[in-house]
Image (tube, rainbow, N blue to C red; front, side, top):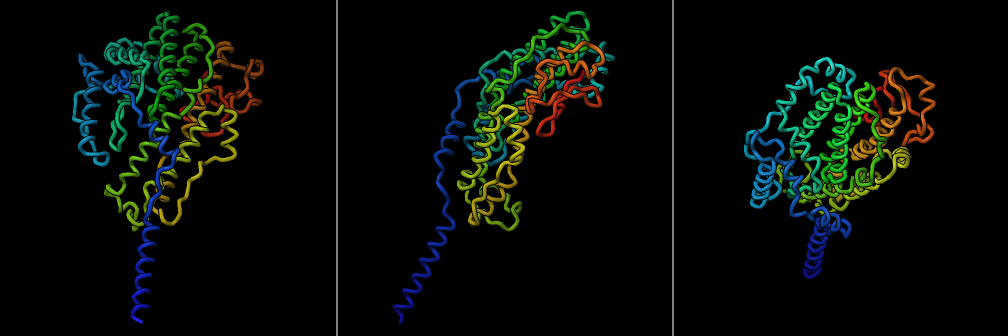
Length: 420
């Protein structure tokens, strides 16, 4: 009898131990996950463009490249001794004055262009005050080796992207000043230089926030091109070409987003966040690698969507408006919560990039139209007027006299319209 009890007890212990092991065990990284992480972690040893941008806000008479290199070194040294979990705070440093004021209104806003014309006497002073930033911006546009050098981490510092956006606005104001002074050809050349540089960097951007910043900047450049041409301040621009595959694709940005997510998920147990997950246990109900493996699916599908042409993208969005959220089962309850709530709607970001083809098409169509009010007959006579998303759909005029295309997702900053 004692032997039977002992055997029963042993079986119970072994069963509990086996059950605990089966419950607690994690998955190994899948082959595709390993490949993605290796590609994302493969970093170049140099990138003059990244280092320069990282120090774009350096004070006057200081080198942006030197400041960018110092910031990168400070972060990497901190990361080596602290790991990716704890918060990194860059040392306080003096910075270039950030341009601000009414002259930096959003050109997509209905009243912005008119207000700038009314305040044109302010342009020389504004451009003189911020000449250093404008000069730095034009230098950055010519650099061709952009690639993020910083190691991925939860505290990874971002480049000063607000300075980058304001610098482009300075270039647009300079184009406006030249155009108003009768230098239309020079103004147009400046906008074309801006556009070429933005598109070059757009094809190389490997951070999602950088990619979206450049998308907004290209949208703004195209808006300026139409405004100045419709006002007969610059000559006829050369027709624009649609997005190139590298400009459209989110492969580099998604690989890095996946790597950043993997770093967060790997180190989640070291963070002080159990209260955010209510009663869930990070030890019993969370499997880091299982969660990482499952999180690859939406990233991979975003890349596939970003590589499609607008018409195919519109059809796919209509069939499946949301990316699937993987469920990894009861053993990974916390991971399922994170998979459900973590990350933004990446499909929306794909849509912003895809909308650029609509914007480019509308710019080309606007070049066919004479200045002044546009009639329905003139719109009907436009050549090659089909919507990139819906080939049989012509452009339309909205209530604010914008020439617009419809699209599968809501537009941002009038990304599918141009002001006539």
